[in-house]
Image (tube, rainbow, N blue to C red; front, side):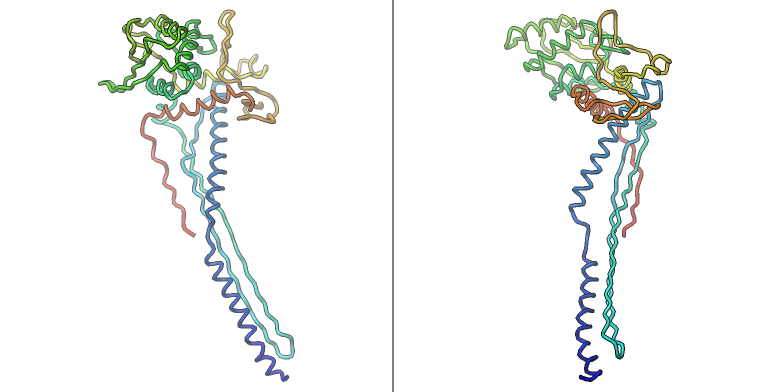
Length: 360
């Protein structure tokens, strides 16, 4: 076979390789971002945001115990931008007197560019979220929704009709403890109801206690609750108002806490390093009143090294502070604290920054 016929016979093979190269280019052009990335990113980012929210809240509880200012940064938006690209090429060389040479090349690229926007809590939002007291309506709606009486009242209430809850490390009055115990039994027996009615000065709450309990114990609890609160024994519906002292025998005056007060109260459950406690680094307050020992809302441990297994842990002033993963009561109360943040924001939320992401 002559040299010319060899070159002619190889031309179809070159075209075939060229077609394969063109097909590869077309394939790159059709590649898109898989929907599976949405599932993975949503789970991953959601977990990170949840963990950072817990750590931020715990750190602010610790900072407040040290008389330091709390700082809150909200994650207002997370935008993930993907870029996929690629190219392919093919080249055939048929030199005289040498074997045919065919070169094929291709490149691909993948990039992931997340954009996270943070918004500090300040101004009007700071006032409404941290400094304003939780509305009594919200507190009793939580009870109606099934949240335990002990958790809701001990966390979010300073006093009910003059019965004092734990405050600034001082133990609650015996009347408040008995009230919580008896209300818990009434709640478990379905003897407490709630109706929200509109009033001229805003929303109102009416608490209904059945006059005929299904069990003798519950009937005694209902009678004793009225006695502790100074309520009339011949009516079953009571108005709930914000305040320290009721105006009549059919009112329940509830002095609720602000989020800042709740966080300060949680701070009294910190096991402080001895050097900081004795050196006067922290706000005063111990869980003792005479011989009565009050129970901290949340047990927060401290140590010089990071814990191995913690629900949330943060470093501060050379020590680590954490809530133990196995302490279910503290975890539940701390989670309830974060839920209360959403109830405290009663006004319109501030506009988030506008983020422009270029298309690629």
